[in-house]
Figure 1 (cartoon, helix red, strand yellow):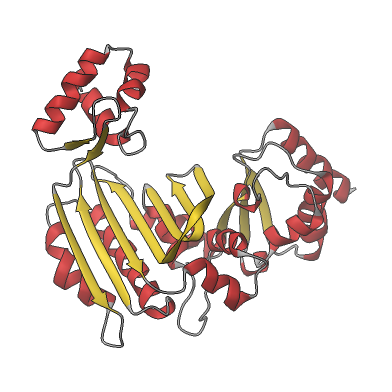
Figure 2 (cartoon, rainbow, N blue to C red):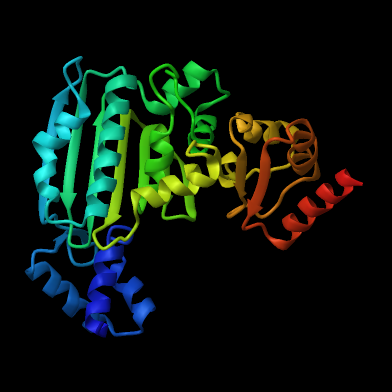
Length: 341
């Protein structure tokens, strides 16, 4: 792939995250002049792939959809997610690879089903956008909000705790008809998955980037957005197998918990109460993978509650950890070794 193609793809892949500073961002990545970047941006605009807005000094760039469709729907007993997919969106996906079709079908129908069954809203809007390098799907309802609904129904401490619980999976307010697996697996199928509800914004990018942000303004209902690159080779089956494959008896027995979501603001993970919040519902899984990415410190009491107290009370649940810094890794191993003496 030539350098020009790489620069064009990089612009298209990063312009949404850097709408005002994309030129500087590309210059830093490739070490080329602003004139070269401007040339590529002008060509992308001419080709109808980018749109420029605003005056020169405050100009913003954004992707222009190759195709889009917006479908508003009334939520009622007649609305069925698979009919919505077949009637309004299936034809748009005939041009894409089978794995992309499967992922988008799964994500759209699961999130639409959540809106129908759980939002307590009267309307939902489903959107499809085909950009030059990716597909974006969104589902937006006017209900009470997913974080508020979970916090209220499950008597959680606050809405941030609802996000932590969602990341574990097997979380539902209606266990008789839902498994609580939809968001867990959808989050891991798409390149980027985000939820905007109330005054919280939650996003997951690829396998490593989890984020919770407080917002100054509140939004009604729930807005879910899912992005996947058109050239992605990810398979629905691979995502399922990672957490519920043959090794686990084809049941959802393994979960992945990003501990970054257990932190509120700049607080450190130090107390037993914080650990107990993390440990909630671990007994529903055979194996738990704790992800320490983004966590720079772990207190002794927090670690002891998880790696000694809980493990001794629940030996049937294996707890593993990844991406811990050397200090955290040493703390965990010391606690485990001392507990076995």
